[in-house]
Length: 508
Image 1: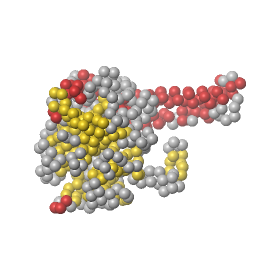
Image 2: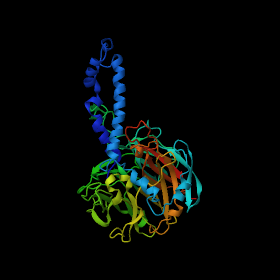
Image 3: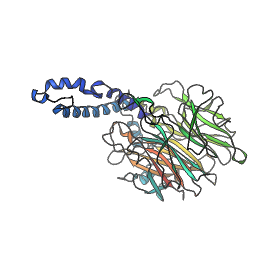
Image 4: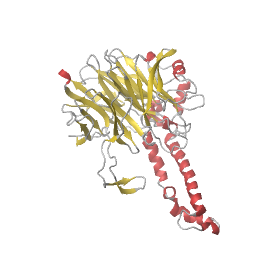
């Protein structure tokens, strides 16, 4: 992922909020305000006493709010003459460009009805299946707000796996800010979920930075690690890894316990967050795992001299303990995330997040990334040219092989939906099917799994966006699609807070 705008905005906001005057105004501001107050109001022992104890926090609260808006403005209206980074998307939509040739305004009018409330917090749900520009078919479904019980904490980037030996579903979620990984499980096919268990925690008494206090403190078993790309090898074996690929998390007991090991010869800078491709031989034995990873080309982020990213392929024959040298795939120039699956005919299909189009480069906004497909017919040795499915606004794919050998792919819609009648942005999660091993995709009959309307119109409007999808198919044909959503950000939001939701649905 080239630039995480949540982190970029947070860094900008934090830089201003760390000013002594705003972080802790009492030493600096208190004495100055005291001299301005009439003498009777200066009484009170302790710096927070009296009228000053009321005035100072109120002034601070207002200052902090406007600092947040300023920071968001600095991020979203960077060196583009003050124009919002969302402006070109709105202009494109007005001109009939919704991010891909397969998307039409008539379709969107059918699946984005005016004044539609968000679907989170209520169990009953409906998935739409488009039929060209005709009225969509409806499919009964369920919607779950997975992170609702977690005390309003940030939750994002879910990964799902089905454990057939246990008939259990395992979800890996990134929680809090900064993120740490936790697991939840379902023993009833996604109807209910367990409490969170952290991937790893500090030993009680460990001294670690306490962000809220700006210093060090003794922890009491606080979470301390990040694992991405949850992958099931079978027989209780699971793998995950940090984004920089410098270590490997593995479990041999269905995710009950985890151990981290350093990866042999991690090599130069590279990143990944999609699950590994598991290649199986006779009897379902794991022959190797393969991974698409990427690193910057050296072209500056936001430069029109794109591409910014280059993706590579590496593999392991010992379940991730050692890896081959990452090989540059020339067809993956301009690719920064790679999700792979073995098609029904044995081809390897790579669904790739593509760099922003050059015309959007100067806005430095990663939501402009697109989605493409590249196919290998020789088990990763050579790859087809990238076929663009969406030029911009849709990415974060997850693929599932269906029993009839069709491929189902889910993805997010971060840009490409028009604003609603009140001028608020709209976001969603969609799915599409390929019946020919990934060569073509039936966009005219794609599924709309969820849509919602943002609550913010200013430079923070992207706080309400969507991030990542993960889909698994259960033995009875039920599909579970988990995703991150910022629907719950309000006008008082000072940083983007994500939630995790899940759609439980069926194709027919």
